[in-house]
Image (cartoon, helix red, strand yellow):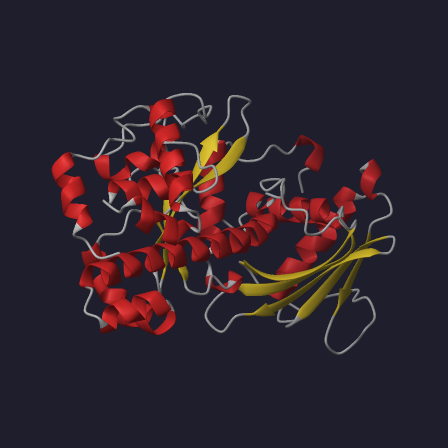
Length: 367
């Protein structure tokens, strides 16, 4: 077996590898639930869908000017009244508030439509946040553990993690490979105290020899009081499923990274194929102009600060300041001041004035 000190990972574009890792997170063993993804024409961007609520935005893998890879989450697309139709019954049962129900009883169709559009968008944003948390947990398995620096939920130096991981070959072959791999690692300073133990169902003692048809097989790799336990058993279809248990110091993640890289290096595991793209995108500073947006999405061109984007989105939909205020939880005067401030900062192309005939029409509109 090749010494790990001379091992170089397969040369794949960093954003391309991250996309492949995200795709791998949707393997059934990682329990994606109702989330699904589809690669867009831009090979480094994935469209994310919730089976219940539809489009919950996109996730783009981008390479920074420092050669690092990071993620950017795009919000769901703008919702039209027609797009609400498939979700109308579900929204009325789960999301239509007292104001919307009253408007429905009074036959105020316009208010009901606007309420349902807003409710569906908010539900999709909520599901996007749940997806981000799910994805961050799954990506740790593939070595991405510094993508969310604002996550302060766990500052402990200890971990107690469990996840399943699919591999090729039999449990016996897997255990032999791990034993040889552990011997190679012990030649390195950080792993001189690494202990490898192979256990069979019939005995809790270290197995000196392993039958080719042994199933299941447990391999324990211990560093002091920290331990990785790998329970491998044959799948009914094909291949082997290994249950991975990490208990002890957080540095076990690095040992798992070495094991995962070794599995990939020798074909025990492979990431999904992603089409090559010759020129990976580079993350643009916020101050630089973004891509040209359609008039319906121009509100996305301003920084996502507070309720600014939502106020501008509703303004472009034709809602009055009073109607916007009711939806974003601010006063009508605050909304008006915010719109004037945004117009002064970004110009009338982004925050247009209302035409006089539009204003007259809006006065007749029920509030």
